[in-house]
Image (cartoon, rainbow, N blue to C red):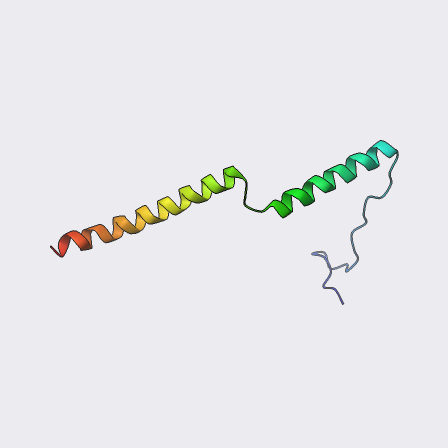
Length: 75
């Protein structure tokens, strides 16, 4: 048994299935294929790698900022 939607109806939302032309079917299939390909690629985009590297560098810099006074005070 499914939990239903926020409004509590429990019915599945109607899917848009009225297709008017063969070209529309082709466009939908192409868009779905692109979305699947994008989902399977994962974080290999260069933009995602760069942003991840920036976040890691910021985290390491913050840790160094916290620990540097302790290292300097121990001398």
